Length: 191
Image (cartoon, rainbow, N blue to C red; front, side, top):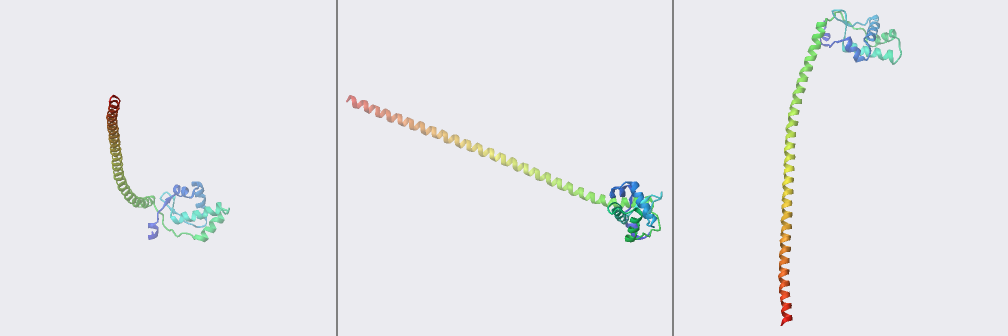
């Protein structure tokens, strides 16, 4: 096997059909039309097709020609072969080799996934501590507002009590003055 093929990721028919948004039977028709024009796909141990990224590009172009340009399968295959050429693949790839490649690619993805999960956990911890700080701050603000309100109410009560005392004292002084004035008036009459 050449070094390039070893590094390519391979996909199964089901995955490619979903990727191209066509049925598996339609994908088979496309592949047969291309193979009739000497295009070679990778074959697994049970003669099933495996597709590389280049094959998917070829098939996507083929689909465009058939569906958008309304060209026959044979004509589309000829055009695609002229554009992309045939592939020179001399050996097949076993399912085990493809599964290994997929696993290796999944391993990289898992490694990246683990890194992402680690970052998410750190972010969640940061968010949690931030929420705790916000809750503490909110509690402090609420307690401060309640304390301020209580102090204001106490001050208002003290001012009201002071005003009552002043009013009572003024009333008492006024009564005393009236009593003095009343005595003087009575005294003036009886003199």
